[in-house]
Image (cartoon, rainbow, N blue to C red; front, side, top):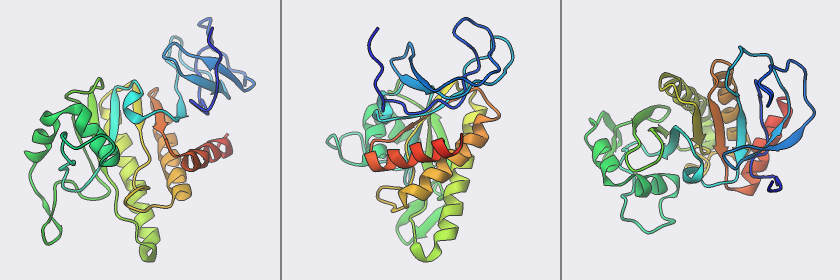
Length: 242
């Protein structure tokens, strides 16, 4: 068996069944366990669940978003939902660019067919307002669906309002995922790159909203956090929530 080495995944929130199929209602000591999908997860606690119920987990990965097997991929989109085109060179456009390149031109065409609902300012057309999301087929991706979430641009002078919009965004994303009956979802940090959100506060919001979702579903949520500093924030929030 290949040795399990963190930080591929740094925390498992819930494990609903033991390996032998029996439900374990006792807390388990933290230990790293290799799973069949290649992830290594640290099991922190076990909770009772219905018999034959699937594992319910929240974890953090340092893997690229599109390399994580998932039924639903969350994209960090812009209000126009225009992407940045599938023909741009690799590395351009962040998460949105990577998703569009991998999904192909069909995704761009699908999004461009959505109605324009207004303007943020003259010439800046909106198909999805900040704090909201849109779900599409995954086209060329291995996933079944893409949920495109639009974060606001962070304004330090209106920080409380910006954080609330980000909180609403995560809430709407997870509400949408709940309607898709997904077993697995991969999601990147939203708004912390070009939109300027502070990483620590954003990690708290993301985990808070994911925890609410986690309590009502058996879907596995994996945060894809490439940046080392940002991943440390996510790990700290998860440790504090034990």
